[in-house]
Image 1 (cartoon, rainbow, N blue to C red):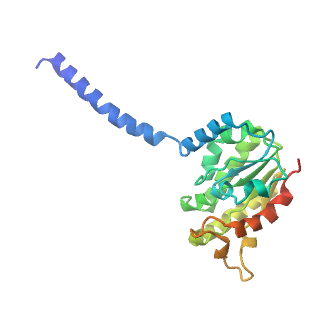
Image 2 (image 1 turned 90 degrees about the horizontal axis):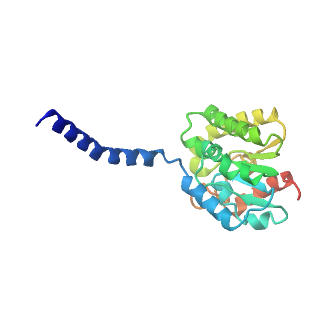
Image 3 (image 1 turned 135 degrees about the vertical axis):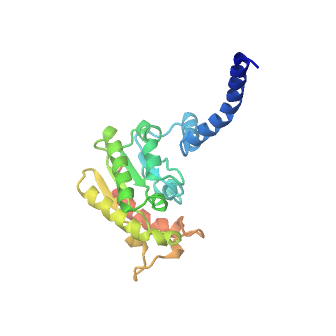
Amino acid sequence: MNKLQKLFKTLVIGLFLIPVSSSSTFAQEKPPFQDDVNAIKAYDKIYAPPSSPILFIGSSSIRLWVDFTKTFKNYTVLNRAIGGAVTSDVDRYLDDLVFPYQPKQLVIYVGENDLLKSPDAEAVYLDFKKLYTDIRAKLPNTPIVYISIKGSPSRKQYQAKALEANRLISAYIKGQTHITFVDVYQPMLDKNGAMQPHLFKNDMLHMNASGYAIWNKLIIPQLLKD
């Protein structure tokens, strides 16, 4: 086999191997929740979203809000949360799920899922700070309601981290303008300071109507009237 034949054989083998490795790499590089975002954008093309809504964003505690439309019937609201999202996911999709709607107010619940992988409360806080900074870059004066991390019985082992993250975020928010920190952690505890499983579904993570009733009392007074 001459040198030219050897070179050709090497190239053929290389071309045979590349597609397998490339397709695997492309699959890994696909951002989390891209399909969810694409579905929301497709939905918006069919059903036009309301103009200047109060926009609810974050993770599943927003996405699965019981009786969302009925609860906020006196307000122009829009729910664009993604179940399972962490703070960096919400930050990644601001250009898709926040800025196009030109919201008159933002309601945010995100950070609880971060507890599972973030090394400490400081990391959760820093991710929130980046999200907030990126929002303010385009919405400098839009009122924001930030809902604290709640105490979920299924994630009791992370609650020290949750409490410290809440403390850090609350302290930061106090130094900002046009943003309100709403503590839902303490109001969801019983008189002895224990978690209340009856506020949650069987998974002890997502709330039932009783849990949302507590949130509604805390959140509705913070919303802007139409």
